[in-house]
Image (tube, rainbow, N blue to C red; front, side, top):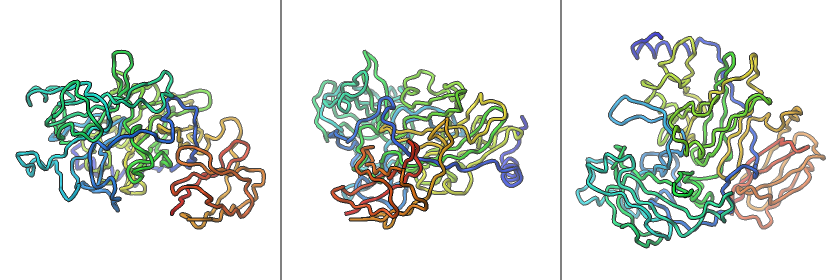
Length: 488
């Protein structure tokens, strides 16, 4: 491999971007609901939890993210990790959700800036118990001892509540919530605790340098604990500016080789509840990257854990765009990342570009999928990709509707007004008398059904305000999906 100074790599990278043939193409996607997927979080949401960090952003919707206007700062799942204070970058699997310590609440500013932190920790955030329960585990000690432990100071709570309705098979039983990297703990092992009680103060003990809360959601299997998706215990309707079910995703084909292909996936900022990515090609390959299953594997930090499929995460966008974060962190990017400037030029370099959606702050996470063992002369249009969340919502490449029959040509539909309060009009560009129109809630429940006349006057009736999914289908194939918003 040719090694060049970083400035020369940037020049070559620009030449590659503008001179090599462009193979990338954004792929049309459709959205549907699959209630047959395993271990879904039942809806509607019935938990009675507090928030672990009390912040103004929970109720105040920011016009755009900033360092003081965000809540979650990392995803549960694959992560591109940059070690603070060094030029070291690695791929690893993050087993929790990080929550920011930079925010305002009740007229007070909290900070993670160690130059501004007062000796009495009055501007360090407190962490609050999310549930009624008992303190099940405490890890505490001197600062020196805690910095030798990955989790640092931590507390685990066994909640009285069980996983939603015990519908999982086998039943998951009691919910366990762990709080990591604390600077001070104010509870003891065996204490009874109530929702909203203080557990301690946010910190940076353990294997971290940044002050934050690492929140882990766990289930107990025998004598062991397994980390699962923390967004299971956050309401998908209470803080929709921070957390919603999966509704859309951007899927781009970025390159094909002889028997492999690369795709780039981007997820909107509010839809951080991804659980599974599945990739198929005819009856030849069928790969599934299940975030919770990977989390339970001791080799989860191996980017080749799933034979034939790599899921490579880029730096979480936080308060910036994917493009700007890529520029800031690409210098030491490992060569197995398609966007890495350190790759062999003969293999191709496919950077994150200054274009939509990568230059939009509303996109929070970007992944590259490397799909291997494809047949020679494969057609990337026939690579079928499913992205699904913890509720069973699925975003798929458009040809996922059937693997046997050709997809039916999709008509177009206009909806006006949208959002609406009482009625809205739907117009199709073709007669679809033998099709079926159905309106779903964000929980996947069918709330309205009709045969598409043209035009269609859709009445609100008694539906509550919120986000709904409109689906037009024919012969069990999804033709159109559109988001409809009802306002009060």
